[in-house]
Length: 169
Image 1 (cartoon, rainbow, N blue to C red):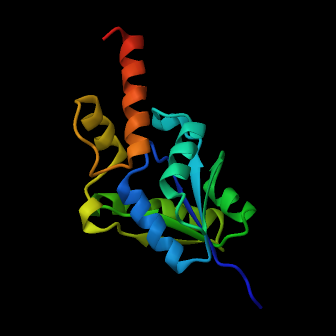
Image 2 (tube, rainbow, N blue to C red):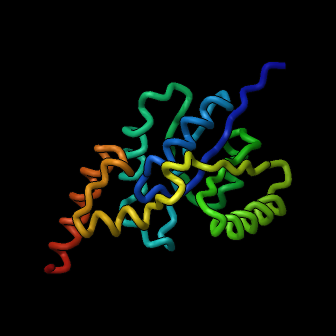
Image 3 (tube, one colour):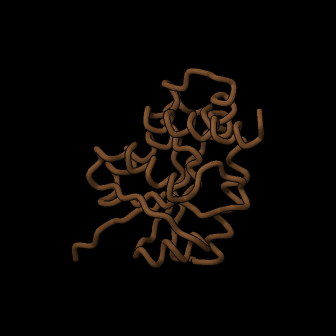
């Protein structure tokens, strides 16, 4: 029986960072296919729309053949089932991520027992990088080239300029 091993890497990716890309690249070497699933999670107060985040991610991972980027709404475990996967990847940057991610994994296991959560740590060069930190640094004019791809940096700076103009800053 030749079954394709599909892993789902769900997240907000607002914006995608080199830490996310590191996990995607490494997962692509373990699994036959990796689907990066961008959540339509408005409760997280995202800067970019789901479509914008999908576009940035597609640009960032275009060289990785077995990776697809999609968006989804609703429960992630339902999306994982719909995509015929049994594996969800979650990133752990610091020990502080563990408690929340562990709680989430146990909840997902109760909701869908056949889906396994695999925790991966990014390369130590990116273990401290978060999307929130990147947005804050961008708003202060920092050079982001060590943290995010050029296409993402361009989109982020444009978005911040537009939001500042709306606020009259």
